[in-house]
Each structure stands twice: as C-alpha cells, then as structure tokens.
Length: 174
Image 1 (cartoon, rainbow, N blue to C red):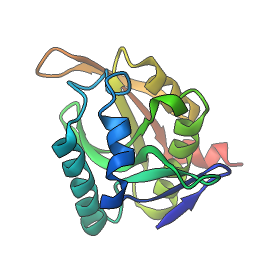
Image 2: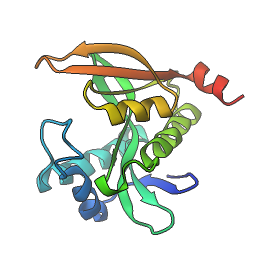
Image 3: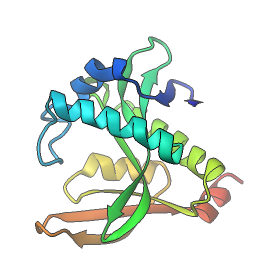
C-alpha cells in the first residue's frame, strides 16, 4: 500500500523505521499532549501494533516519507479509537519536530482521508486531541473537519473531536 501526494509518500511502516519513528515519538515537544514521550519499547510496540492493524483491518498508521529524500518524518493514517466511549475511525498524525509547520501533517491527513473514503465503508472520519493541542486542531480543520464534540475522559482531561462526513468530502471535491 502506497499513497502519494505532491511531496509525500505514505506506506506501511516496518521495523526498519524504528530509528526514524523513535526520533518523532520520543521527542518531548512533539509528544507533549500525550501522557509522556515514548521509550524504545513503546516505539517497538507502536510499530508492532500497526503491523497487526494492517493484517486485521487493511489499514493503520502509515510511515510518512519525504519523496525528495526517502526520509521517514512521522506517521499518519487511519485507526479505530475509543472516542467519548464509542469506537470510531480516526485519522491521527505525528510529524518530527524539525519538519512541523510545513504542511506535511495536513497533506498526509488529506491523503489518509481520501484513502478512507475511497477504500472503506466509513461514512465519517474523526480526529480527536487534547483541547490544548492547537496545532492538531488546525491540522484537522485543514483536512476538512469541523468541531463536532468536546468531552472529558476518566482522568478529567478535556478533548476536542473533529469530523468530516463522506457527503461533506464529496461536496468539497465538486
């Protein structure tokens, strides 16, 4: 599975992507909206879990690769997440700190959104994040989402939920 955009390629991650993904997921600034940055074992589990998702669902988070250099700069893709108590299809994204603010996350998320609506029966796709994660909110809006919900989890953390429906996506393509 390969998805290409003007500047990026999204492909299934492999164990060989460990170092590149560790640079993203272990970075304290990049992961400041998570409970903590990942350690080596967490990154290996992240890769293993996505390899399993590919086998079971045919999708997961994919490695985000710069076409110009072949360098892995993060991940983006479709997973099933529990959002406010319900399992929903969610587009998630993580981009290495030095590559942020260049539009890579929104470019990758748009490609993941298009792939989702062209290859799955899902009629709506979500992105959710801590309410303080403004860059992630902006990315969700950049790929066409609108704010549809806010909730608190069992730890009293506040989250925002963005979504785009298949009908909204189809309308935007006309």
